[in-house]
Length: 279
Image (cartoon, rainbow, N blue to C red; front, side, top):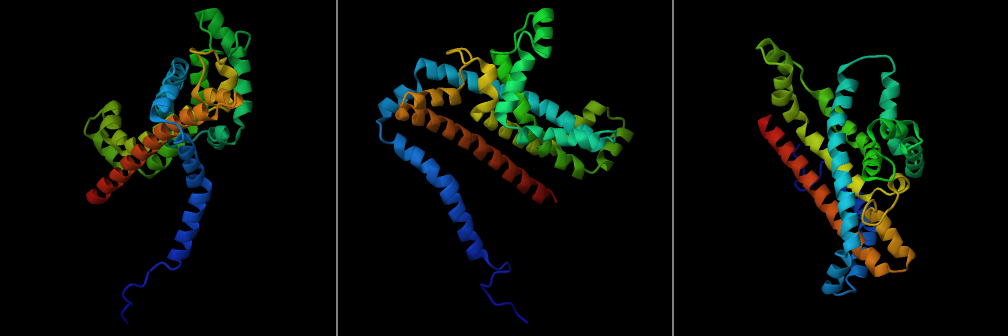
């Protein structure tokens, strides 16, 4: 019996697509469009002048630098943690696996307060670094980076972990039998497999770090031109009822996050096509 031409294999496409578009429109697109429309009310010259003020540029520098460093550290440590969770069996593995997701569930303000108490000059960790190395963690860029590492590490671990679980170990065993060292095996066999997932976790961690507020505002100290982050700058403008400046700065961050996630989506899509063609 021939299947009718034009009949969809999966039923309910029209209804499910309508629900999806309605959800995206109400929850995501309309609020973002409102931000763009509100910002469009000012002239391009005023917009550029607003988003390039020295204090705003300084906050961009703090947010981008700390988020980038934190994401790079998360990328390295995330691969190590994912490797341990996938390749080894040890007591407390399930507990460790659950702790990885703690930053997702923990209120960011709670994380910020806890990290601040630990890293001040009188805190357990901060006192050690201050007395032995003369390094202050809290109320510096170092403290901001520590907070961003804390909230970003799950993105890398959960992105890389499924790829490691699905990897065929026979290639590693064959390379080992041929005399390749562990470093060569990782670089030539493992790293190319996990690279797309690793970049995805890095991009998500970086994007989250750019917009993070709750866990950073307590430990940053919020010193203008030194430790003031962009989300705090936006909040300060709102408290001064300068909605134009707040939305202008927010639009810059929105565009940045969109570019990062778009690049991440492109790399994942390209990697999937390459894998499909290779198969």
